[in-house]
Amino acid sequence: MFDFVTQHKKLIQVVLFVIFLPFAFFGIDTYFRGGGVGQAVARVGDYSISQEEFSRALRERQEALQRMTQGRVDPAMLDNPELRYATLDSLIQRRLLLDSALRVGVTVSEERLKDIIGRQQLFQDETGKFSLARYEQYVKSEGMTPVMFEARLRQDIILQQFTDGYADTTIVPRAVVERLARLSGQQRELSQYVLAPEKFMKQVKLDAGAGKQYYDANPAEFRIPEQVRVEYLALSAELLQQQAQPDPAEAKKYYEANRSQFEVRESRQAAHIFVSAEAGSGAEARQKARARAEKIHQQLLKAPAGFAEMAKKQSEDPGSAITSFG
Image 1: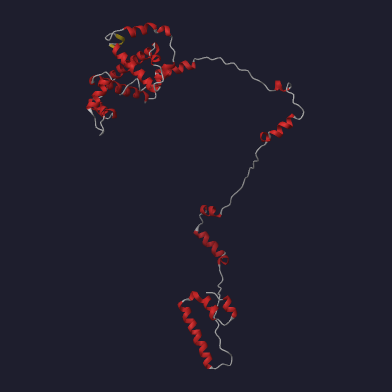
Image 2 (image 1 turned 45 degrees about the horizontal axis):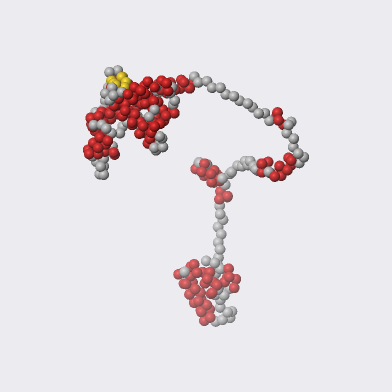
């Protein structure tokens, strides 16, 4: 339920701790309790706040306070002149705000009112749709008719729109201004006495060796952790390279002027597999050596990577068999 009173819980908390002058409320309290149902408790312009309206507001405030304190507050403490006066004051303020809102043309359409009621989870069934039965049951449990409930809800929405309009303009409410004014006008007395250690130093007498004894027993109190302050400059070729944007023309000019720094002389590495024929051997022996060399050559053409392994196995030169590479 959109209740203007229960929405302002902070105000309720303040009311519990503010102590009014009890004598100022004895007459009002008697008037609250002794009036009949149809008797007006207060009048705001042409509008009369009835005893029934006041009793309902008081009951709602008491229930809200019970919920806030989780039932730990004695109900007797919630039935006192201070709370009754605060309830009446909130009803008067509510009516004044409502009259002001109506005078400036703040209204709530029937469509919006129905939409707000239909979106309340309290009035929805298990499928999430609006339940008229639940709505009527809740209104009845609050001691109101649907007409009374919708009128009260309409007022709450109008007041919310009206107060939001003022709040959004960043204008400070009168209550806040008055509170700040009271705080700025407050005067407080403070007493201060300074105990200067110098006045008592002459009266302090330590036994011989007491200082050293305390120091030896509590060395951590006098130890200062070692600290080092280091300043360094980091030179990173990678970072400089990212920041440098050389001109291609200048790079080419430097290359031409220092070509020798970038030249790599041609070099070759040779390896061989030695196949020999004994000196003085005939043509047949030389022919066999040649055929063997040709066979090794054909094998290497098919698998050049195996040159080093082939040299170890086939070369008749001990040096090349050890140092040959592919």
